[in-house]
Every structure is written in structure tokens, then in C-alpha cells.
Amino acid sequence: MTHPAIAANGLHKTYGDKTVLDGVDLTVPEGTIFSLLGPNGAGKTTAVKILSTLITADAGDIRVGGHDLATHAQAVRAAIGVTGQFSAVDGLITGEENMLLMADLHHLSRDQGRRVAAELLERFDLTEAAKKPASTYSGGMKRRLDIAMTLVGDPRIIFLDEPTTGLDPRSRHNMWQIIRELVSDGVTVFLTTQYLEEADELADRIAVLNGGRIAAEGTAEELKRMIPGGHVRLRFTDPAAYRSAASALHESARDDEALALQIPSDGSQRALRTVLDRLDSAGIEADELTVHTPDLDDVFFALTGAATVPARTDQPKETVR
Ligand SMILES: Nc1ncnc2c1ncn2[C@@H]1O[C@H](COP(=O)(O)OP(=O)(O)OP(=O)(O)O)[C@@H](O)[C@H]1O
Ligand SMILES: [Mg+2]
Image 1 (cartoon, protein in one colour):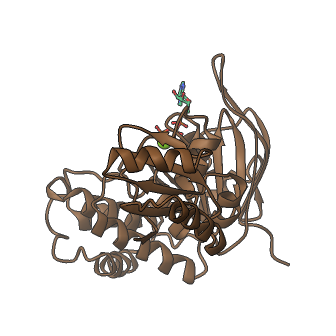
Image 2 (tube, rainbow, N blue to C red):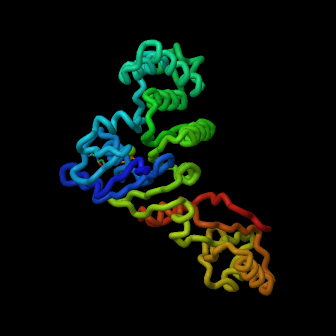
Image 3 (cartoon, rainbow, N blue to C red):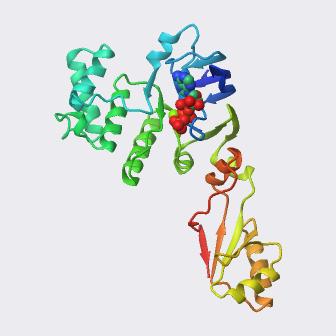
């Protein structure tokens, strides 16, 4: 019988009179990636610290790796690895020395420690830099070393608190690849992130933390279906054409400055045809038409109560002209 890798019920945590977690339930099946999303200060790091035994919850039942965290914290620690939001890398010593230090902490023999360190440094493309002080590493290299250090004890469950914050797109994609490889080896990953795209890309399930509670949970697809927000956007260069279109499509939201109209739509072929037919019969041609289907950004803003979705240079999913 398999038990979930992580199961938490009724997690509560307050600091002074500030309630950070107010009854959080989480279940993470073995061998999956779970992503906890939330705005700054939502309590993501607090949740990671509680689940990884670094701090205690005020209330809640927690099982990690099948062990009750309240009574078997040591067994939990043996099953997990944690890469914190802020680097655990010691800059004064070399990458290799950082690895060997971790090996010591895991009571590996000298030979074993050297072997594991060399393997992981190789795997994370750090062999060349291994003898240099970690303070000379780039942000991406430090982050890779951080994760390599986490893997020294061969944990079956790992917590990654914002593993790609501050990384450039290439390093971020490399990190995603590393995370996918871990999971294909059967490791369970609990990941926090600020990047919705990252959760969308990696996570089997996503939970959005807001106001101390899980505001929504599901697959990326399920979350996207939860909120409206699909629309067709028409842009014009000619103000007269824009005004005629606005009256032809009177239900649309107007952006007078950008000469753009936004029409709620599910983005289906039929809905698009209707809009185009109405423009046709009014004898108007839009200069640009984009179809926007809700993405995780929309979900995030809808659930975390930001007043409006900031105007983005909309990366159109499809463009029809
Ligand atoms: N040791 C502490 N003492 C008092 N308050 C704390 C402590 N640690 C965290 N908090 C507060 O708890 C709240 C949640 O913090 P937490 O670090 O868990 O947020 P987060 O979701 O990880 O944010 P970020 O995205 O900025 O990393 C914040 O309001 C923070 O100020
Ligand atoms: Mg945090």
C-alpha cells in the first residue's frame, strides 16, 4: 500500500498576533511534483519549514514519508532534503568542500563521500568549478550546488523553496530539467515558486496559498477552468474604425488609449467567426486580432485578490489577421 509522500491536515501557524497558516490541508502523492504558489508573505516558506521539521506548527497533523512528524521527526529528516529559499552554500569554501561537508553530515564514509560528491558535481555540471571558492560562482551555479548538496543524502522527498528565483531563462530551464529527472527517479518534489509558468510547466498539482488558506488546488488545467478571462482582443490603428467597431460590438470592453476592444469569448472557432462576421457586416477590419485563453497568471490574480490584472504586452497564443 502506498501512502502519500506528504499529508498535512489543519496546519496552523501564527507569529505573535499574525496568523500565517490558518487551516491548510495538503496531500502530495509519491513521485509527483506539487507546487505551492502564493504572493510574497503568503506563508510558502513557513509551510516548507514546518513540513521539513525546521519549525513546528501550532496545530495540525502532518505525515511525511509515512512518518508522523510530531512523534518521528528524526525519521522524517532522514527521508527528506531541503533547499531553502536562501542559499545554504558556504562561499568561503569550494564547491567540492561544501559537498563533502554535506557528506559528513550524512555520516557517509570518506570514500563514499568523495564518490557521491564527484558524481553530483558532475551531474550538475560543476566539476570544472569544484575547486574554486563558491563565492566566485554565478547565481545559477550556486543554485545548482545548493540542490546538489540537498541530494547528497539521496532523499526520497525534496523541498525546493523558489529554486529558480533570480535565474536567467536558460538556467531556469536547466533547473526544470533537473527537477524532472529527479521525479522520473521516483523522487517527490514539493516546490514553491513565484513563477506561474514554472508551476504550469512542472507541477502535477498546484495549490494557491492566500490569506493563510488554500484558495484553490488542482492541476494547471483545472485551475485555469475555474476562472473566466478568455477574450478576443481587437486592435485598430484608425480611430474611426475603432469607434465603429466599438458600436458594432457594444458588449466589448474599450481601451480608448490603445484603440483596442476586448470581447469575452471562449476562443472557439464559432465564437471567433461570430465576431468577425459582425465586423464584416459593419465593413470594419481590425488591424490585429488576438485570442487570449486564461492562463495561470489570470488564476493567480483572480484568487489572490490583486485589483486588476496588470496590462501586459499580451503574448498572444494565436494571432489571426
Ligand atoms: N520568524 C518569524 N517571525 C515573525 N513573523 C514571521 C517569521 N517568519 C515569517 N513571518 C511572517 O510570516 C509571513 C509569511 O512568511 P513566509 O516567509 O512564509 O512567506 P512566503 O510566502 O515564503 O513569502 P516570499 O514569497 O516573500 O518568500 C510573513 O508575513 C512574514 O513576515
Ligand atoms: Mg518564501
